Image (cartoon, rainbow, N blue to C red; front, side, top):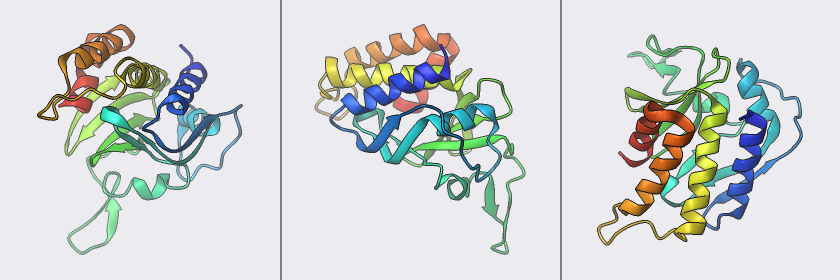
Length: 193
C-alpha cells in the first residue's frame, strides 16, 4: 500500500471517530519547509497531512507532532542536556530517527534513512520495531481506530480498566495481517504493554 493511500485512510478514520481531538486532514501534497532534515517519506507525510494538535483518542491514544513542533519535540531524544546543562547530541541516538508522535511519554519514531521509513516504538531506553514502513503503520492505526470506534463504540475496557480480549484479538488480527508476526508483536507491545 502506498503512503498516500494509508494517510488518506488514517485521516478518514480520524474524522470518523468521536474521541479524537484537534484537527487532521488529508490533502494533495504541498511542499514543506523542513525544520530538520526529514528524508522523502517524512516530507510526504508532513506534506499530505494538515494538523492542528491532533490526538488519536480512545485506547489507541497517540499525540501526533505537527511540523511546527517537530524540532522541539526531538529534545530529550536526539538532543539531551549534559551534566553541565548544555544541549548536546545524544551519543546513542541515530540522527535519522525522527520522533513523530507520543503516547504517555513513549515515542513513535521513523528512521528517515530507510526507503519506507521503518517505524519503531521507544519505551524509555527500550525500543521495539513496529513496521517496515510508515504506510503500514498508518494503515494498522486507521483500521484499529475504526474497529475501536465502530465495532466497539469505544467500550474496550473491563471493570478493572484492562482492554477486553475481543478488542485485543481484533487489533492483533489487523496488525498481523498488515505488519506480519514481528510487527504485530511490536505494535501490541507498544500500545498494550
